[in-house]
Amino acid sequence: MELITALINDLNGLVWGKPMLIMIFGTGIFLMVGLKFMPLLNLKKGFKLLWASRDKGIEGKKDEDGEISPFNALMTSLSATIGTGNITGVATAIFIGGPGALFWMWITALIGMATKYAEAVCAVHYREIDENGSYLGGPMYYIKNGLGEKWLWLGFLFALFGALASFGIGNTVQANSVAHALETQFNIPLWLTGLVLLILTAAVVLGGIKRIAQVAGKLVPFMAIAYVSAGLVVLATHFSEIPDALVLIVESAFNPVAATGGFAGASIIMAIQWGVARGIFSNEAGLGSAPIAHAAAKTNDPVRQGTIAMLGTFIDTIIVCSITGLAIVLTGVWTTGVKGAALTIAAFDQAMPEMGGVVVTLAQAVFAFTTILGWSVYGERCTEYLLGVRSVLIFRVLWIIAVPIGAMGDLSFIWLLADTLNALMALPNLIALLLLSPVIFKLTREAGKK
Image 1 (cartoon, one colour):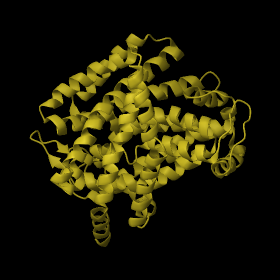
Image 2: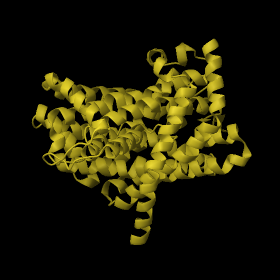
Image 3: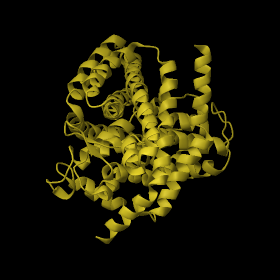
């Protein structure tokens, strides 16, 4: 077992290392340039389309194909991305890479908007309908229908990595983080949290993507606004220091940060690597997960859904992650040597004594629960691609059973394996996006002429 763990640990270092980060970042830049910076220029339009599609198809068209509103498709995607990465991931990036890591998270998010746009365009353009009337899409389908039979092996690999990774990164690891956070903060037994999560997960997941999307459409905006509001309280208590903090973040992105207090110091490479890695881990741009949800949107226009989908990266990182990062830098807790979620809690506690820990813990719990819901869609679609429509119900039952097991188990190995598989999902997806880029650019040009 130790040998297997060591091998996977080495593989993890490779797949989350510089070559992979360069590939993800490079693909985003290539797509952004090829799209003539359309994702950045159309940010305002994206929010208008999102607001107009809350209950119906895009721009209120009821007769468009799909299962869920474009708004709920984005909320389902966000339910999977807004999670522990926004609290623990940001804190870890700053703890190791210094304040400059936050700057590189921002750059990664802006570039990642092009990647997320391209993923959703392909997802809607190449989607299928199964015998139950469900709309299926994502990397495995745009590889199959866009690249042809000789590339089927690539779609198989993505689906395999996605199905296996979902039970770790999207289920057991999330349940475990909730259970331990609630035990630490409120002394709630692990088994009780596991039982409650089982009941809540079953109530939603057994209803399929429509019920998951409905819950996500209500819960995700609420939890994001609540967390951001609490973070703004922290920022407000240090309002006069915000300009200096922004200067520190930008300067640290291009200059080594010396050791100070409990901070060990960081090179420019560390700032870039950890900023990019945690940014991608948080918003999942390039990993290929989000387009699985966007494929179910009620729309016949891939470009419009792509314009909505790219907002996921902006909301997750530019808004939510920034709140966490600025709170940590402004309060100065990044120099204390505290790490992980405790670093975020320390920042919130400084502005809201005794309440900071409660706010962050509750946010972490809700974020993790919605991640379980969002990733159930991803895992289910990957499993259906591999084993057929009859596997759906079996998958949902296994998904529900895995939740309490995760809440009470020791998941150090599962976390390592799932994190590795999560990164491996990016390889087939990025190859497909690069090969299909002429189609993405063509569809975008044609939409611009309408």
